[in-house]
Length: 581
Image (cartoon, rainbow, N blue to C red):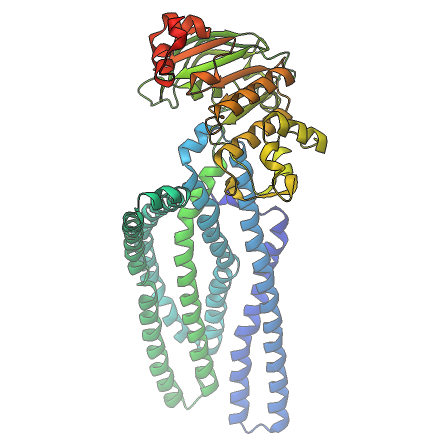
């Protein structure tokens, strides 16, 4: 885990190395100051004059100034290194997620990935900040302070070592108890984020059904559950400070008592007032170092689980990979399904698709009809290799899709989903997702073919109209037409419309289909629809049922022989005039 995270340091290795070095010099200055003060106290006891006091005072000021400079520089280097690590971790995770297949994303789920890129990265950033500064500073301060205490107080300094075994045992017990709690808590973080995301996305439904109180109670329960886990962990971690304070203050009492006795008994020959004062100062330095180490230890314990979750994302390999010698050229838009079966995961009990054999010629228009859950969308997602088949093969242009370069394949296949996404930016910027080099005239032509120009021209800023995130400021039908225009700009070999005209009226739907026939006649067009009117003029219509192909034929053929298609048609056309013919 440490090696994987450290790999994200890259250009921030220098400040990462500089921080401990600067901290070392800062600590050296700090531990030398009590030593100089002890000498000054002893000189004053011996009757030193003002010139000696000023001399030592100047040395102390210089040492304090040096310590301040080293401290400021180490703080700046530490901030640069930790924030840089966080930036690179987010970048590496984001880039890695871009390579994921849908199967990989399903494994983690979106809220969990968001938590890992935000909360978990922040935890690691804070821990790294403490690691290269406090975790370096505190042990150095302990070691140097003990050395100086031994120099000043002799064997009396060994009293400080007596607390180490007790503290070590206490810290180990705390680690063993808290790590499982943090692991459980972070999983609940994912669920909490999922609840928030679901509520915000479904805000209209929540308000329409007046379910605000229910959602608040659900969120409150999840938040309370998370709080209880953190409360248990923090209660255990809270023992850090009392244990350390108890041990160190006991030691300080021992040092003060026996030190005073030595001064009186030896009349200052074995131990002087200056030495005892410096011993007490070094003792407090040790106490402060252990307190800081305890705080860092708490944060690092929490960040350990966050680091593990981040590494899971970075180490995950996409279930879809390019072949060693990929094919880059797609000959045409022909599609062949040969004995295809598919299930979403190896542990799934049943196939989503079974025994699919289908052959589509390049340039054909294919309609797909079927009830909810009949795997219509699953079928077309195999074409652009969003998932890989479990059995059999899918061919495009006569070549198995697994032999293509994935980018080349997906550039040749355009998909327009029912719930397609628009991004924040102007209409023109959104349409150029289909072709980043498209001219203004090409954009207008695509918008015209998708019947999107009808509403775009009514906007004051026309194609420079700003689209809010997710297309929140346009209607469902307008969003669908913009997405169709975006796909047309791609000029693909295969165009898939997955129920993407459900929010437009039948007249507009017909105009869009007519425009596609005329604008991209050589493109293979697959239209998934709930209404038969959207596929009536298709070359062939596929009827899906329970993950299998129930029938294939023209509109007239299916009306005569297929009960499923006939039932859908008659339910949408009450008169059933075609049946009478």
